[in-house]
Image 1 (cartoon, protein in one colour):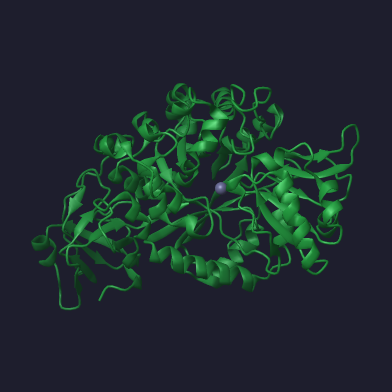
Image 2 (cartoon, rainbow, N blue to C red):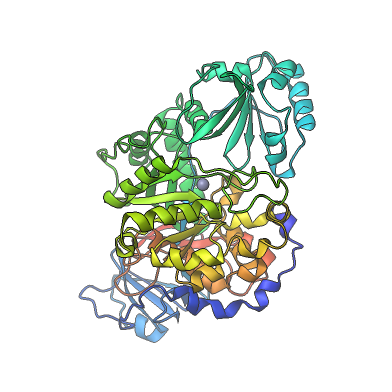
Length: 565
Ligand SMILES: [Zn+2]
């Protein structure tokens, strides 16, 4: 993906610098002196640096002093160095850039079964159904029977009239086959896979999604959409052990601190919450780790929330943030619910995953519970409907205190911005989704494209913007995502400046988890979570951004990663 974008031209960069003030406007400016006297001398001083604080009261400084887990001073080299005591470790950063630790506000991480044979399909390349079948047939001919065959497909193959288990059974009767839509909202299983996962071939409907069925019957055709597809993921991960999860979390945390990420907010749908928390207690990684639990497997929207009892040994830096609901799909598989039909399928406008009655029950619970609610909302019709129900159920100030989250929010259209701002909703966007401008143009059409994936306008309208990767592997690179947020190939006029994108990835993501009084800015009294970067991300060419690493990462005043000499 990075290579695909390397030659993208960037009109957005030229207009970028005015955004910072607007982006920070919804948040109260911290009015603190640059240097607060502290009884204890600092444990660590970083000086001779360019410190980007994300604090509108003082956006830049030269040095930072830390005592224990918190920042005690931000100021000039002279001011901060004067605070050093005999025990203070003093590091000369040689002019490097320091930023608040990045906070990935929407990440998926979980163990995945080994031993599946990958078909090597690239879903983003939209392989045709015929090409998919060819590759399943070829693999079935040479891979031992019984081995899972797994591939990634796009919206075209998912939607193909011939797609389903019968066509797969014809070419691979003795291998369980799973073809996953790369956006994670639909998949196709053959009969062997349905059997292996314990699904009945007449599995009844349930809330939150649907099973494809042979016309006029209750017989499954092998296609699963939305929550039933999530059930597949959970059933596949069920046999995995605590040790698998611990190893996955540790490897993930190692990579994140190398990129300068110090906080993550996990959208946990692979594993039961209690199991995730137990694995996090054992993994004991240095990251600050928030978890959104999904009611799963979903049988009723009135089910009690997942058990959030904290296991012994779970560090305080792991927090259960709230509950996540997936309300629609994405434009890639045309599952996002739109107010106008898809440009490339004029008889279809997507669908909500829940009925009006279910949606009302979910929002009543969001209003009444003391945890936070995160909604996967992509289509503008879904957002419009959600806000209708919110406005009906409670006054805006009740909702503002809740900070209901719009995960992704491609459909936060210009006319919906004032309502979202009034209701105190937070936009958690994933810049990696801006990397498919051709797909988005096909789905929305040229006239609607300027109204999707708003970022700059959202910030200007007073909707706090947070960023996260919503990806695995190299897609989790926050600097790749920062590049995409500042270029926005789908909608360049909505790109953020480098400073605004950094603010969104730090303070904005802290706002999204009700934590901006503790982290997200470098100011006296804040948690000492920061990264010293390998290059100045405010200056380097866009194509160089994804190469950024931290040379020093600090969480709660403790150095957790260091290559700095
Ligand atoms: Zn996600």
